[in-house]
Every structure is written in structure tokens, then in C-alpha cells.
Image (cartoon, rainbow, N blue to C red; front, side, top):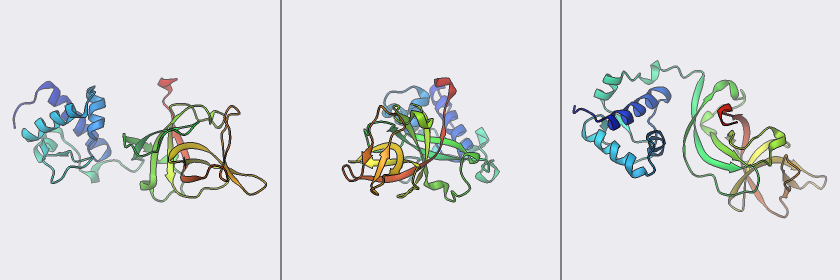
Length: 223
């Protein structure tokens, strides 16, 4: 196997450590962020060089996570097989961009990476962790519910939610996070937890529940 340049070595070590830690390779966007690249094409170039030198396997088809380590790379970097990883206390869930805790802005379809989540944060009633995804809160409409701008919201994908629960809803194709409520007339509405924001009533602005917020993660370094 050919020698690696410092940049190629840095990228490969990130790919191997990510694979060893969570069980699968990072996306090109995650490589871009780690390497400090502004364009995905730069990550594609370094990945192509690693394939030419035999450190990554050439995929049968291009997918979001097609970075497969070669047998030689696994041996060099001592990547553990899945059965030897300690995966009983945590698992990875997809990060799907941001959702405003205020006015709805954009639909939640943009895969940005993964978030490692402790199983201690998940209620025992959640049987299928593959239905979980993470969204980053933006804004202050849920401030009084303890949701701050920049928090990662852990969402369970579901089309219905109990009265009073905090949900992610689609409104005119855009996403927002609010508390699900119902008034005396039986009309469902989305309630912000900040008096500076208005309520959204289903009879005036129909909305669709896409998930229930069950937990959040916060970095204290951002405060």
C-alpha cells in the first residue's frame, strides 16, 4: 500500500475512528466538517485518493455512507468488528438539520450526520430506536419548556402524540416544534412556551404531526 500524505492520513484516521466508534463510516459532509473543507468536492478528492491507494473499498454503487475500509486498513488501524464494540449503552441516530422553535422555516429532510445517544435518555416504551432522529432547535418559542436555541431535540417518528406533549409538526410543508394542545371546542392547536409567540390552530392552519420530542442534548460549551 502506498504511503499517505498528511492530509490523506488525517482523513483516513477520522474515517477509521468513526467506523470503530459507531459501527459505520461518516458521510462526505462529516468529513468536510472535520477536515475544514468548504466544498464536498474536496472530501470526494481525498476519498478517491484513499481508494486508489487501497485503504478504502470501491463501492458497487454510490450511497451516503459508502466509505468501506479495506481489509488492510482495518488491520493497520485495529478496527474492531461489530460484535466486539460496546454498543449496549448507546447508539447513533441521524441528525436531520434544524427545526425552528418559533416560526416554521424549512422541512426536515437534510441529513447532516449522526448523534451518539445514551440509552438512559430513552423511555423503555421506545422499542425501535431506528425511529429516532435528532433536530437542532432554533429560536425561543419553547423557552419556558426548557428548550434553548441550539439544543439537539431527540424525536420519535410518529403521526399521533398525546395531549400536552411536545411535537415536531409540519405546517404548510415547513417544520416547527410546539406543545400539542386542544381547546374546549375540541380544536387541536400548537402552543408555544413563550408568550411572545402565537398559537397555531388546526382549523385555521392545518398541520401534520411527524414526531414527538422525547429528550434533548445540550452542549454547555455553547452557553
